[in-house]
Amino acid sequence: MSEPAAVGKVQAAQRVALLSGANRGIGAACARHLFETGWSLSLGMRKPVQPDWADSERVRVFPYEAAAANAERAWVDGTIDGFGRIDAVIASAGIMIPKSVIDADDADLDLMFEINVKAPRRLVRASWESLAASGAGRVIILASLSGKRVKSAMAGSYSISKFAAVALSHGIRQAGWDLGIRATAVCPGFVATDMARSITDRADALMTDPDDLARTIGMLLNLPNHASVAEFSINCQLEELY
Image (cartoon, rainbow, N blue to C red; front, top):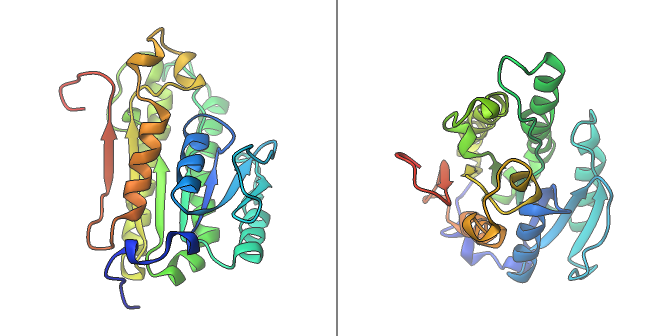
């Protein structure tokens, strides 16, 4: 399959992104930014509600429960029926259970793996044929800096799932390279969302703005095949490596 000289040469209005966790936080910010920059969107939500900024011709909303087996099939099929293509998958839905690796039980770990790792893999797998047909398919796995280091005891169990999410992104990148599919693990620290607010008393102004993260994701999606970014770390505070 021939590789486009640059993704930017494909008209943005022709490109379709399938995005989970679109009802709030990073997912909602990313959806709005992509819409404003010309993408058509297929949004997966637990409770599907059309955003007030959306154009019904370019934005379609589908019910999606990440923890439900095979939930992705109807969503992907509906997207193909409606738009005829999927050029990008952005797996933004995620869950954190703040427990140490000692305090967490198997049910806690199973739930985080189901939503943070297995559900994104299923979404990408269901979209694979369309991503390959694009010639410039893109996958964004919303991982975390907790997938790069274990910052505290209470983040330990969450980190296990997010380390796996980073590995998932690398596995997708390896599997899809010759098909023009590129995958990036996006690894933020604290982002001003409900999840972060539940575990830190940092003010929103001292955390990464979801809109800044959305612009970063938009940039990654628009890079050409020969400018692949495997991981992108972004932080609101100084750490030795991140």
